[in-house]
Amino acid sequence: MSDSSIQVKLTILDKDYNVACHQPEEKEALHNSARMLDERMREIRAGGKIVGTERIAVMAALNLAYELLKEQTLEEGYNHDMNTRLKLMQERIEAALADEDQQMRL
Image (cartoon, rainbow, N blue to C red; front, side, top):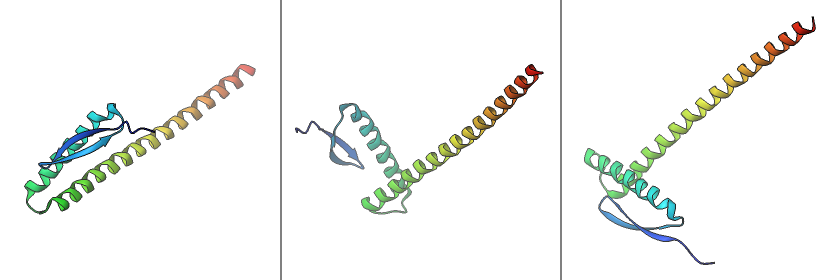
């Protein structure tokens, strides 16, 4: 089996990283992810409270993970709410159809 991955050069906080990208169509998303991480790390570094690239990277990763989990939780809540509403609507429609069917039999 041949390794068809391509090497992508990413720059994060003025340091270059070569990362394997297995799908060519993922290359742009990888660059966008690196750009987002770089921006977040620069914001944290500019805040001046955290020193050291490793600590800045950990804080940036924690912040991004928190935001992702928060979004997922909101989406799950939205989906749950929609499912509940759809079930209620389905029950009402079935009840209305049953009533109509009952009236037609009379």
